Image: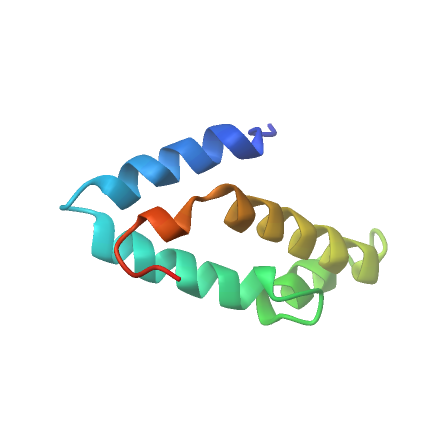
Length: 85
């Protein structure tokens, strides 16, 4: 089941603006960005591709994973959250 990027971004924004979840959410998004959104060669994107080795195209899956992660990170208005960027 797919979730539109804007819906997921809104949910994360709620977590980012809540004082109880802000710090953990900021750290989680930073790690997510590092593992997936830095490109197809990022650890998480590469692992997603490797999971497809026997079924599909690992390079394509890694690229798609990175692109989706980049879209999500770009959809988050991080500049509006205390010191995110």
